[in-house]
Length: 239
Image (cartoon, rainbow, N blue to C red; front, side):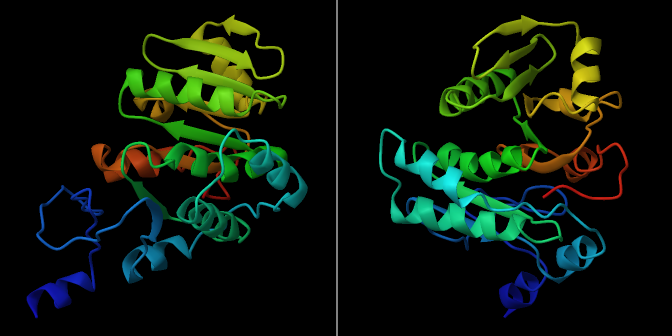
């Protein structure tokens, strides 16, 4: 059928998401409950991504188990499965490209926190890009609370908000943008959360190993690609 021929090239999901150019509505979509991941790359994406090397993130089983055991709630099957699939992917030296899909309140942030935790324990950096300042601030607060027991430096970078906060000391440092950018480039900021500000030319990372894009259908392909080419040496692409 016409749909089957087109589906060889495109993947449509519940978000009416069209990966290569503009969004298109389509009556056929993946119906899910809870939260799950969808491996995005079809042959065109896969061919492009296999040209690049990425960072192999060692799975820290002890810390991950401790983190999960100390959550104030139990992860459900879908959350565990999604997190495990992502963790298995970032252990490889080829870039991961996944869509984490779920309804509001289904636990996407807590699922994302597990691979983030493993990247940070590997002494590498994570960038989290949200489409609005409000969403960026909300995710900053959520992830800060999730990682409170650890000693991580989290930064918020938007057009109107620039500051750094340590999860252990809870010390909040308001910085000039240029000061924060220097710290990011030196690798002294672990998790950077922001808006389109993250893809400005002056933003460079020491070792960016994981990029998370919230509501990625609201960003263009070129914008997403630009964020993935922000490493200092530019020889390895983040997951």
